[in-house]
Amino acid sequence: MRTASIVLAVYGILLVVGALWHAIAILPEQGPEIAAIASVYLGLTARRTLAGAVGASVVIGYLSDLLSGTPVGLYALVSGGMCLLGYAVHRRIVVRGVRFTIGFSIFVALAASLLVAILRWMTSQPTGTALSEAIAILGPALPTAVIGPLLLRLLRRIDAAFARTHRERDAALEGLVP
Image 1: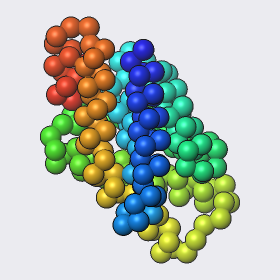
Image 2 (image 1 turned 180 degrees about the vertical axis):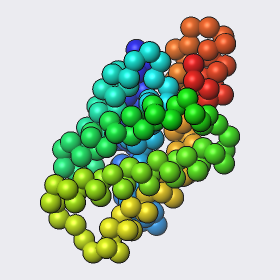
Image 3 (image 1 turned 90 degrees about the vertical axis):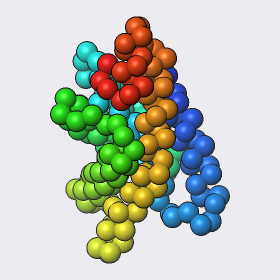
Image 4 (image 1 turned 180 degrees about the horizontal axis):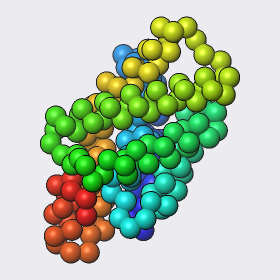
């Protein structure tokens, strides 16, 4: 139920941000990497097994593919990989504190954008010049730095709502692995 709630909340955020992002002319062309942040969060907070978190991440990536118009499966694969990355580091770092959360969001955006560029190159999809590809990799970092901490706070609140004990609820709100 927790994972389904996270997927549903992220889908709503993808809808709202996707609709508003291109309507405001002063914003950069590339939006924030919402699917990547949510996937890493699912990997960071995978409780018992990794299968449910990766499955939810692939669903979030697929929904992002459908809403953004990218080739179907691109962000689904990237989101699954980002979930695995989050799971790989979940015992080594604690993502809390404003500065660290912003830095972590930038790292996630750069890693996801780089993975997208590598997958596009490996599958012979059309790519631009080296400068345009560098801009495509670096572009989502700033919007993700702004949206990432807010999204992580919302996902922590969802985790806290599904906590079984007061101790788990406090740990979820602080950003600790429950």
